[in-house]
Image (cartoon, rainbow, N blue to C red; front, side):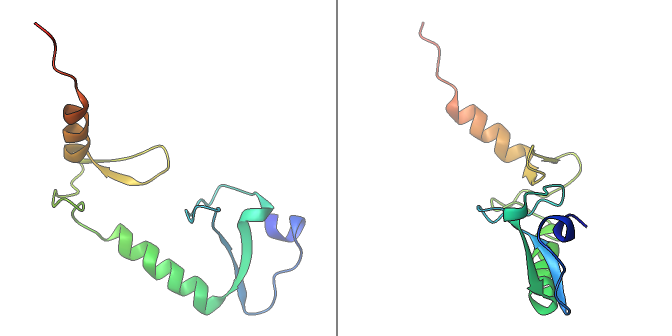
Length: 97
């Protein structure tokens, strides 16, 4: 609907996809510069990649994505709590005596 209002009709055989300049996917953004009509085959390829990312069961460091060990960050990406705790711990400066 937003695409039709801001850009124009969607060509036959195309679907509207969103990608901001950094390649992230946000469905709530309606910036017309981030919207584009792509062929259905391309839209399916992108969707397959996104669903594959969602099917990952472990973080890149091998920790399981369980409800207790994962959360969604402010951008909507799943994050590992164990990795976050390790990053925070490594940044702490030891106290001087």
